[in-house]
Image: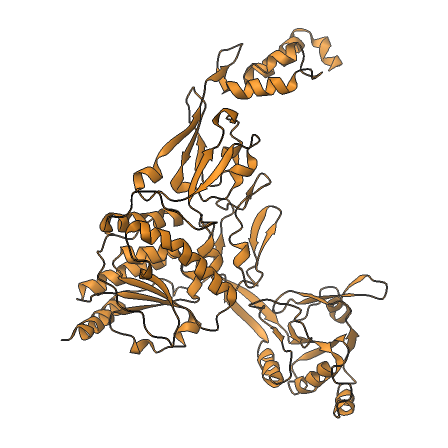
Length: 555
């Protein structure tokens, strides 16, 4: 039997014996559409589209004129205006569209300059447009992936097809709720201090936004591209159709069974639905193992490295030639982040690459040592570094610190002026991953740091009142150095002058006293309280009041 036939047999066996857990009933969101179609744009184009939409009697039409006729002398205009004279036609000055299938709203400027919700004018206080056909010169929703139920056409060539497609969107529709969001793990902001924004820059549907200091995802706008989950360094945003951990477990079992069946040089191909439609999976060489997913960008760097650590010789991510710019940008960014990790682990950079269907297949790389005895468990970051450490151990990786691209979520925190640090622990208070932490239970105040947990969000740098913290991008490839609990600063504690208990760093107390010298509220006994712990401070205030009850009236 030839090598390719052996690989084909091994692939068939592996696929047959390895079940996926992502075909369970997903959590969904539901759209309700009653066929209320808004046609908006130049009046001649709007009325021409209305004539064609009238062939779909279930549609309820509203015409909104937002521009002058594009072809006012067209020979068919008299007939078009006559056929649509019975339809409600409204003027839409400065239109602003928002919403999604079944819940579109259009705000326009009224006669006195006031904002008017056009959907309420048409359908009452709770009214909404279900569908929108935008015929204006510039799209009202200029998004890479506009919401369901919205179409923009700058020309009339596809008018019939667009109206027919919109007419199909009537009824009740379910869509998966693609993501889970854990704001507790999010590094966007803490206590008003700005931090990580990696996800916000990568959403092509405008489903992500910042609201009152938190990241929020609109499940009705989200279309599951997955670039935000791949970019999130903490795993606060996680793809759940399927979850990354479930998918990585499937990949580990698939690769293990392929090996057990006698296969060699396994090459993993990750392909979204659009990419899978662009090539024949049956024609792939026998050692290519296809992982079909909803979107190629939904599988991130931790899964790529996990596949290599589980024995794949190469990982390719299929990317459709007509994919959106945001998806391509997200994948390029992730590949740039993967490059130093591969180099540090002693693995060739071409072991992870993008493949465009229709082009030549990437060459086969050398066999890779199976380094992981089981699927990594834990958080996104724990799984990422478990895979990296396994590759590093198997291939004799680098020992010197690795350079990383700008904005990478790997690196250290440094004190550029150790004497200036007062150990106020403001940085600890905002750190979302506990990379920066205080000593627990010790008599000496300490500021400690663990590099593996640091995502370089920058909140510590922003929160430091003394401006002595600096981010140091990079990566320690040796696990022991990266996981080490390092001491950044320790100093003598100030002890309470009443009970003797250590209660704060001495330099912090000294700095506070220096700043309050001459302050009218901190003279005499009040100044002495700055040298007491929190308990003794309260006692010192209330003991005189207890001894002399009449003094309470003066408070």
